Amino acid sequence: MTYDLIVVGGGPAGLAAACSAWEKGLKHILIVERDKELGGILNQCIHNGFGLHRFKEELTGPEYAGRFIKMLGDTGVEVMLDTMVLEINARHEVHVISAAKGYEVLEAKSIVLAMGCRERTRGAIGIPGDRPAGVFTAGSAQRYLNMEGYMVGKRVVILGSGDIGLIMARRMTLEGAKVLACVELMPYSGGLMRNIVQCLQDWDIPLYLSHTITDIVATNGRVSHVTVHKLDENRQPIPGTNLEFDCDTVLLSVGLIPENELTRAAGIEMDPRTNGAYVFENMETSVPGIFACGNVVHVHDLVDYVSAESERAGAAAAAYVLGGAPAGDALTVKNGADVGYTVPQRIRVSNVPKAADVFFRVRRVFKNSVIEVKAGDQLLISYKREHMAPGEMEHILLPRKLLDGVSASEITVSAKEA
Amino acid sequence: MKELVCIVCPKGCRLHVDEENNYSVTGNSCPRGAEYGHNEIKNPTRVLTSTVRLEGGLYRRCPVKTNKAVPKRLLMDIMQALNSVSLKAPVQAGQVVLPHVCGTDADVIVTKNL
Image 1: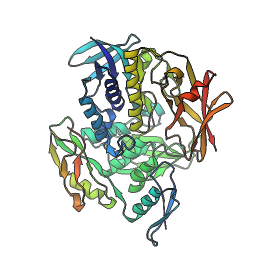
Image 2: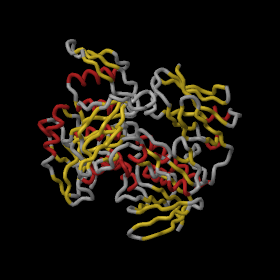
Image 3: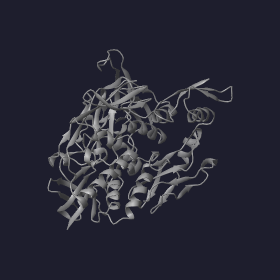
Image 4: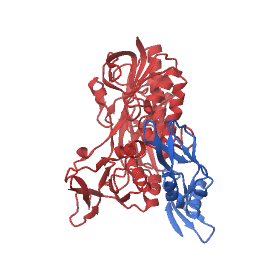
């Protein structure tokens, strides 16, 4: 049997894409998930704050996932758990392996890639020092603590002030550990202000901005000490500024990387700015009939936005299967001054309903500012913002009417002070 | 006078709260900011999320939360109370684990079917 749609990954992106494709009329849909249950990383995110946009209430991660799992239960979507996708290709074949059924090659009319992202590790950032036990990514420690029931340490230093690191600072403190410091390379935190207040300040945990770990010392194979230095404007350690911490654990919250091994191996065109696939206005990749959504395309701040983007991808997969491939020339969207990337990177104007969603991140902190969209020197539209920061994804809607009037082959999105 | 950063939205207004003047708030740019500053100094509250022991489930821990915000000063007391809880699978999201925890009007409830 050929499936209408195979969704790779059963986290928030995969769940929303599958539900949406079902609603739009696809009948043979399969989600392939490598874990023992649906919900993805939300299952270990037991804190609250999810769903404010989507459900207008604050849910915990498992509750947010639970809403979508329940929705999926009301459809006829099939789910394969404990199953790993090994390969996909442009012929829409999906190679999977599981202990229960062995190796299988499945066929589909369309595919949605929803593999999410994974954490950068110690190896990715090259911290000097010994190589002992006791160094974890914040997300692995979160899974150990919140699901498997293991306390990973008693005296903790956290490197990186991304949201997962901040959340783990509070979580470890609540469970009786002493969190000695949160150390951030940049002069500003990458996390939400709410988390700085409720995860660090509530518990008197110091945040050292423009600092990093310069040495990890082991005793009997376990972390026993770390050295932290203040950094100059070139991010070089300043001699004599060392802070010394006796600790048994280092948690790393130093960024996320979209997990795109399958995407690359399928020959899908990748964007080096996002580490995700280039996508069109409907989240279709460079290979017709293969779509991508959620953190595998670009790392989001809020799961609410992942769900919305994934519903568009699921609906587009349904339109592809039921109505055929969209036609028309594509407009290239370029990132201009102080904008790091855009998603989508390409817009087929004839396929845009009323407006095209464009997401991006700015490269620095802005107070009163404007986002400008230009074709060459011609200003097409601008949007006012009171506040923008690299840690907060921006979103604009480009009206179809406006795009219809563009004769150039590319447009540029940039940011500047008002 | 106490100073704090508003967390209602990403703008991060610097609020000044006057404890001697009925906790009046200045520096806010919206009414939600005033409400936040007032409550945060007068009676700070938080929703507590944690886990409790689970027997016979897919995992050894079951996620829980208080179904209302509780006074911040009680968070560690509630953590202590949760240490004595042990659940048996199956559990349903919404199931009450500890009613009126530590004398508050909040219940600790399960947040996942396991």
